Amino acid sequence: MTSSRLQMLERLASGLGPKGFTRDPATMAPWLEDWRKRYRGSAAALLSPATTEEVVQIVRLCAAERVALVPQGGNTSMVAGATPSRDGDALLLSLRRMNQVRSISAASNSAVCEAGVILSALHEAAGAVGRRFPLSLGAKGSATIGGLISTNAGGTQVLRFGTMRGLVQGIEAVLPDGTLYSGLSALKKDNRGYDLKQLLIGAEGTLGVVTAASLRLVPAIGSRSVAWIGLDTPGQALELLLMLEASMGEAVESFELVPGAALDLVLAHVPNTRAPLAGAHPWHVLLEATAPMVAPSPEKALTAALHAASQAGLVRDAVIASSEGQADALWRLRDSISEAEQKDGPAAKHDVSVEVGGMPGFMVEAAAAVEARFTGTRVIAFGHLGDGNVHFNVRAPEGAGPDWMKHDAPIITSFVHDLVVAAGGSISAEHGIGQMRLAELGRLGEPARLKVLRAIKDALDPNGIMNPGKLVPPPGPTQRSLASAPLRP
Ligand code: MLT
Ligand code: ZN
Image 1 (tube, rainbow, N blue to C red):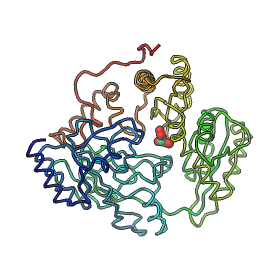
Image 2: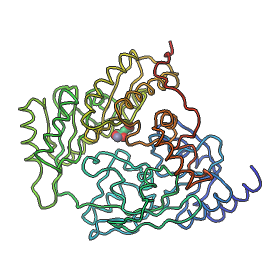
Image 3: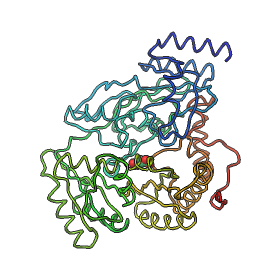
Image 4: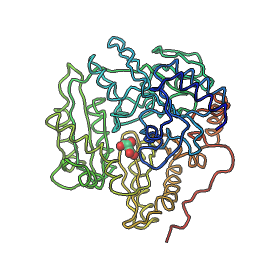
């Protein structure tokens, strides 16, 4: 390490104090690996500032010395977006100590949270003032507001409330040269040109460090009804959604598709789970409908709608949770799919979207094409059907060797992504690009999109210090599709 780098680290250590600076390998180790344990990096130090002012000082110093910074929240990125590279040059910048809800107002339906606030803590804070923050996902106990913003997280209520893009009203961030952008005001109308807030949302820390945000809250719900439904095809599931929306409107907040095979994995690998319906079904839907405080519970309308759907031949069987405990147990089945898959064995995972109406057809045809081309594989596609987004995961054949992930999975991924692009869809619906999808975005991104991504990155971060190697594919030759490459014998 050069002496100027050592001096810089000493300055950071004395400025941040022992709680804010460490080079201890054991303390740093858990944060240097992504949660799927597929990427491991290295860093010169772990910085944990407690205030925005400290973040400004860190970024200024790094800009002057041209040292890379990798911002990190709960470290639950699905695409290794918060894992540093292996060279060990970067500094890992954890926002977890910045965990204050600075203010919360029921009157203006908003909360100002620092980047390190954990999603479930925001849920509680909002509940305490009779409001709620309407975005939830499986990692709510560890995902942070800064990470959710930087990845434009989606989750299970996008159907009604949209992604983080629709829920962030203002942002405070430190730009790559150390300039503080104080844009926390929750302005409903603001037409002063390019929207810096929207540029930072989903930027994966490549354009600056989000330190706080003003977030939209909505009235707390009065009641909810959660149903588990067995049916035959994804096409019927979408028809059911349209029918429910026609009769219940915005009451339907979540509509998650679960194949029978995914439910089986959950029942096999996740303790204290049990099948919600008596019989086995090829497909299932988990649905949540809500009603505001003074309105009647949605249960009656839901029961009637499900009855009509059953008469129309769309529904095979259904159960509506009769208590909050049962409702939580149904959600647990859905939220545990990733965990169960991970325990079951290797899979090539994809997070894809096509237009909502085209998703059932895409799922069925793409699964057939994959299973025909890659003998022994099994597709398990699940998730946010109402958003046109499923996690299209291809499980390794029985007895696949240890090299399957390294050799065969990338070939399968090329094959799946080629199908997605041919269907006019996106190869990253909600997880982002990070490191994992970088080469594929470079291969398949439209030239105009790539040109704009690179131009914005160069304009705001000309020295490339903010989360290098993520999101923005470097210019130059890209790899070809591997879709027709031979598999390992
Ligand atoms: C989910 O919807 O459960 C997560 O986004 C999925 C995943 O683990 O792929
Ligand atoms: Zn998802």
